Image (cartoon, rainbow, N blue to C red):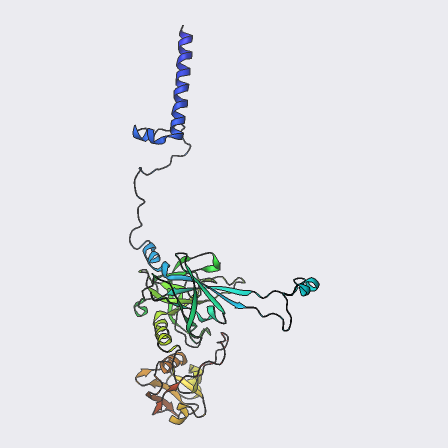
Length: 402
């Protein structure tokens, strides 16, 4: 009798456990309803901490997450697909079936050679900023937005001397980015770089401002770069460098790399928003960028040169050459003069001199303060319009002509 009772008990427990296992697997909400949600049929080897049902994932404390800045800026950053037709051999119809029969596919068909970069929507009217080298020589330009929309873009204007270009697309309800204040930025501030590196899709990287006012890099004629260690890779060119509020601080344009794949070594450069704004407004107003010019070839004033000339100062720019019939020649500037001031602005080096002259309006008059044989002279000069560059900027060409 006792043996039969024990067998019945064992069978009942087995059936109940089997039923409980089936309910836990197929209808776990029934267990939650009766307060059995924490019931474990099998004891785990490692205890896991589980948040109570219905608890929201906690947000990071302010200052430890930059999700809001990224969320604000990312919709305004676009991918740019530029293409240029590959020329076929002169006089040959490579699409001719007879040609293909004899020569096969040894010569390529005419097809676009695509490059990829990034851009930033700065106006809801469809204006996009990017690098000039991203769209240089492109026959067709396509823009892909973060929301999945695509559109053909038209080049409004380009400025090779700062490596900036302005595009426009015809789309409605466009997001745009707010321009930040680079004059308030400090070395050590956190920044985010947004773009499309290696065509993997929109990507956000974080770093700090490593330096401000970088020049003498040979990247462009007018240099005043933000240096950052936020990862910038091929495909990021033309993308946004933003502050922790999601405001635009610069346009990512170049990296320093000794890697064979062009990957980042933690040294990237962005064109500051102050330069970006000036170029954008000039292109929108006139279709080009108008800069001042006086026609001199400056050279850096080094301590060694200052000592050889028996000079008491080591800041300024030496006039290495004066172009014939230029405003500088008509003003009386001579090779060997040292430019120390333009109007009321002190000149410390050739880069600053170029930037100061470029900002003057053609037709305006300026006062050049020079040192000649240790005597200070003032020479009035009438500013002319800077000639357009005759060829694309060579990044290895360090020669300056102002």
